[in-house]
Length: 445
Image (cartoon, rainbow, N blue to C red; front, side):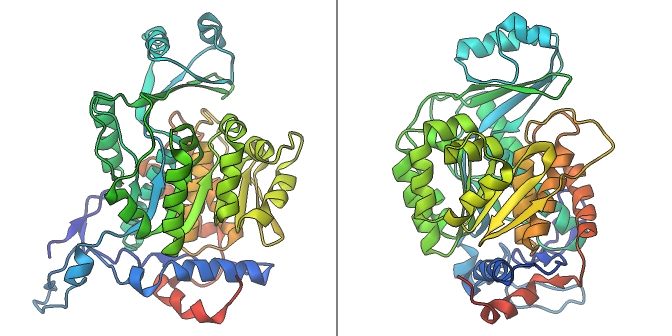
């Protein structure tokens, strides 16, 4: 079989097992139950049915010495897609610019606000930015997370031959030029789009205006309204995934509750982790009932910031620590970020306070910090980190994102991050092949 080229270093190398990600060294957890949950869930996701799918090749390989090896996958496995992470989110194209307060005043926009705008308003804002440099990128909250996670996996594969992660987005882009741009950028980052483009439809956009004090203002055009539906391919991908992630913004779509509930149920039946991201406080306030219906049905991880957690709990004055502890009983792991104050993780009655990852540089654009945190945290989970280092991985990725304009982790950043992440852990490094041996040693949930 022809050697595959690394998307980062461009060097050819043997195709490694998809599911043989290296487990980073981990420090002992204070709570044995929490440690057992992390190991048990990670092992559950590496069950025989999942771990047996190694690569897309079903033919025998010929090694360098000319000897033939057995097929990496059976013919049945070769045609069965398998995904490490499948996300259900809204594809958007981001326009990011650094502007002065005067521009916001001239456009009648409240600094730091989040607004949904019309196509005409979008055109007016972009016209006002005509002489201002801005960056265009594939965006959307969950898309940022998935692109970051995929690039971290690519860097991990480049540096350690782990095989990377198989990542997909269950979403339909518009049939316009922006939709083609989004699909191309996602594919370049290693994120597959599972749905066909919608005929005669427009792709949503998010205009992110950042002032010199790193304060961000969001202007979102959501595109044309469509009921949320999943194709047979998307449903199959969700049922064969290890982690299924739902973006909170999806509650804004028609038929969202029925579609999301059915997809999450399918994921649970196939032993996949169900993860929920809040989106923003406004979405939580508008769809509190839907959020709680999904949480009460059973989720493994909840990502939110302090404001979103407060809206979910109906407690505006609560701290991140209080929010994490309050949400802990309703999900396996609650991760609450709090900007420069770090984050708090609650699991099985234990609270872990994670400090921010400080750098010597001043933040430029905080847009995407939470998305980067989620990417780093899921990367840490897939690589075998304990909860403390899962939070530290999230903090480190978030700190890299805010140092320049744009909301996604770049390829160069991913390589530096993967090189730096082992520095925050202690102990002996093991291979993911060693992890399943622990499966029957712990019973927690």
